[in-house]
Length: 278
Image 1 (tube, rainbow, N blue to C red):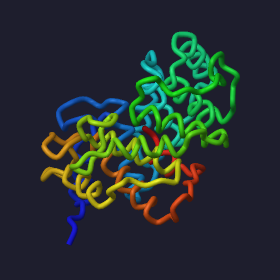
Image 2 (spheres, rainbow, N blue to C red; image 1 turned 120 degrees about the vertical axis):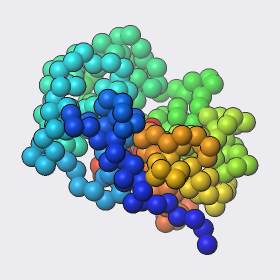
Image 3 (tube, rainbow, N blue to C red; image 1 turned 30 degrees about the horizontal axis):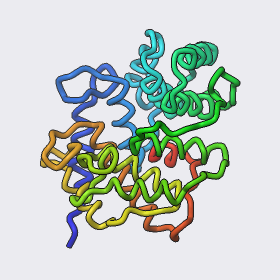
Image 4 (cartoon, rainbow, N blue to C red; image 1 turned 60 degrees about the vertical axis):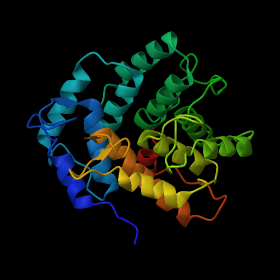
């Protein structure tokens, strides 16, 4: 019988990282971070927990309000902060967000930046502002990783655009799976859970599947440690980021196997947006 993950131990692992100040930290002794708070809440929600509210989680609401008031960092961290606030029903300063997105695209119009800017505009602002560079034609980097492909395909799906060369892309993603069942950043590189998550998101958008789903599931499950959390590989220490990638990977794999071959996922629900966030 195939080994199953221990959800009770995982939830205990997550709750031990909750801080009295409201957020979640990488370890029980480290302070809260935006990244860890997002990943902890994503795990809780995907495993069936209710979204927190300012009334049910006042300390968390206070923490997120404090993080909104400080200077914002990279666009990926800003995205996770704003998405967490949105999930918790907290208001945000839309004018400040627009100015921040504009400044980010002035400095950088890479695929990664456009991805986060477009998602903030659509999911947080609920509009499509015409920021310089935000509507430019999308191209994959010459040397891309599985995360680049997943982000590229998310934007294509969000805009309802066809994907040229989908067979080539699905074949490339499948080629990043290793003999241990996991996926590398690109073909021939080491397997890590974050790559499994991104590869499965990308394959989902293409209506494709991994070459070896059974071995992939075994790899993911083997990354759960005796402490309840997941390491990014079977011998790595457990952290919230790897735990999130592990749970998201398993859920994407389950949903993929529950669809007929070639059927694409819907991305309109909050759960889908979380699972496909890489």
